Image (cartoon, rainbow, N blue to C red; front, side):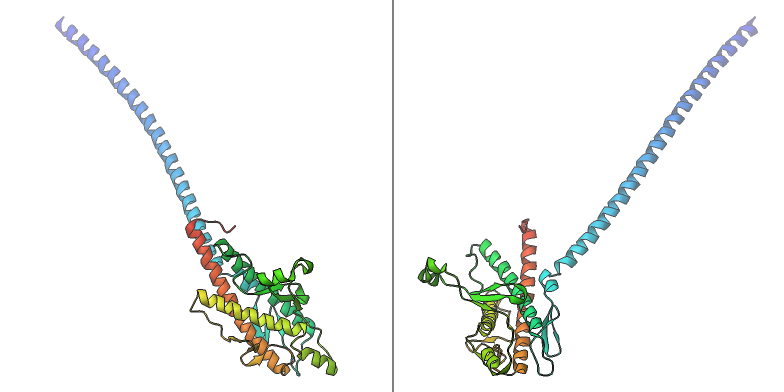
Length: 295
């Protein structure tokens, strides 16, 4: 009787242990399922983190590339690209057009006029940018850089001396206070009449070349006043209207001398162009520092 009771208790205990074991197994399975879900979630998080890191690395790479491109572009001058000043033997050139004439190489006047038209467009662009900056900092628009005004018209460009306030008043409304415009182009001339016409200082073309030299002289003075380290390689000689001791006016010397004078003048203009490019880059850096826009 005692043994049967003991056996019954053991069977009950065994059943309880088996139930507990089943419960533990059930919980273990649930824990394993939770662990699997957690591992899957962790794997998804890690995958997303890797994607984010890859995208971040790609964006950083693009940002560095854009920064390098921006730095490279900041050293590129639109003016230098649009107006390429160089030389071809004894001739100064701008965008491939030669300036000057030689007995051994009589450049057509159409090419010379085209070159002078490029010069007029270049200098009027530089003038507009400089005077625009001066106006924004409190200057008077159209004044302060030079007293010369360009009228770029391709191969038939013109140039004039700006009227002073007193001249505008004295001329009155009847003349609309217009300056006297001179042609920065020539059709040349043949024979004695043509030679005399080209040599006369009072001719439109001769006066236009004098004004062109005056512009370079005044621009050089303005730049040097703001940048003492700047100096033109061949300072214009006024009022003789010479550069390097050679007259800038066609007909007042030999064609060789005139060609040489134009080459020296274009060297000065190239320096002005270089200064304008540097000044524009510095102003752009300053605008970026201040968070301003260029317009």
